[in-house]
Length: 232
Image (cartoon, helix red, strand yellow):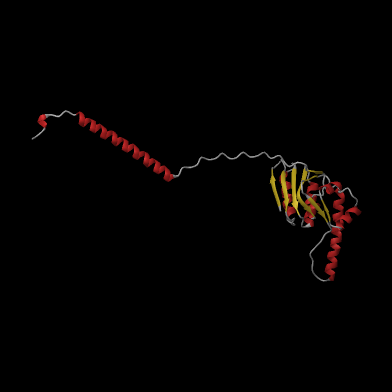
């Protein structure tokens, strides 16, 4: 799978993740086209896949005119190790990265002649594989053939020693801690708001009634009583 975040004119970040399929080379070409000569970071986390696609991705990287940094952030196996085998690219291995190189293999069926033809094709692909590794690795072709015959697994130090990797990524990126989002004030319960409003209105109404009754009582006590207003 090829994922990318392009910044036209300023390069892009490309991720090669999971199996490499034949169509991935086309998508990778589109990524580099959008990078438009700017710096490119390639993040590799792949167990390999289609060798021809690995060759194509490798050649696209080699032909790119801008600066390329390749970050091995996980497995870089089989066809993925071919894709990063570019002399002028800078390859950085992160903690836990692992590399594996081996001879080509294929699924085939048919009669004896078909199987012999497939074996001849695989021999030719092995020769191409050795020539690609030889352009970057610091060991000779005889050693490369021995390594792919044995299906060689490499840790970061071993990959650096044979030239597949340029350097180890010593420090994890310093990512600033995100400040917690401001806490939104709790929304009051509508029923509680209604109860409070009713209670407040009721209390105010009772107070007003008390004031009125007090006034009436006080007025009745102070009112003059006239004899002629009293009937026997």
